[in-house]
Length: 247
Image (cartoon, rainbow, N blue to C red):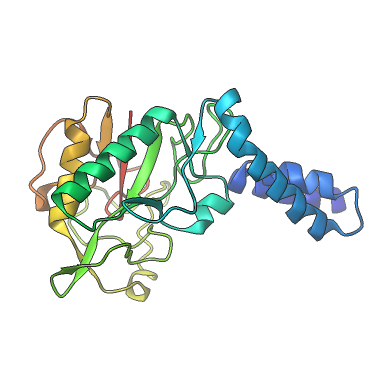
C-alpha cells in the first residue's frame, strides 16, 4: 500500500509541476519528509530557471515583475507552468507594449505557459502546451464602464465563462467543462470588449502567431474576423474564459 500511495503522489506531483515527483522521491530517503520535499522542490524549481534555457530552450516569465506584462497568479510560478520559448516571450513583450500604447494602464496577465523541460510532456488539463510555443492570457474586465487593471473574475483566471451560444452538445466524454456550479461564485465583472478585441486582433495580425483560440460566440460578439482566430473544437477546454495563442 505504501508503494502504491507514494507512486500516486509522485504521479500527481509530476503532472502538476513536472519537478514535484522528483522532489518527493528524494524526500523518501529522509525522516523529515515534508521539509526535505519543500526544500528539494524549491531547489529544483530555482535551478530550472537557469537550466531550461540551455537544455530545452525555454525561458521563465518573471514571477515578480508587475506592470504591462505579468503572471496572473503565483500559482503558475510555483508549479513551473510559466515557461515559454524566447520567441513567445518576445511576442508577449511586443503585445504588452502595443496594448499599453493603445490603452494606457493595461496589464497583460499570463496564465498557463509550459513546463521547463521535455517537448511532448503534457501540461494537464491542456491538450497542447507541451513545446514552449503556446500560452494563455486572461480576459480583460471592467466595472461600471471602468477598466480594472489586473482583475479577473476567478482567482486563477480560468473557469469563469462568458455566457453565449455554444457550438457543442453537452457530453461527458470531453474536456469541455461548463462548471455551472461554480459560475455564481465568481466576481460579477463585465468583459472589456475594446481591450479584448484589440489583443486578439493584434495577435491574429502578427506574422509570428499561427493560431488564436477563442469561442465562436466571443468572436462574433467582438466582431473579430480572420482565419487565425479559430474554434478549438468540442473536445477541448472552453475558450471563453481566456485567450490561447501559439506560434
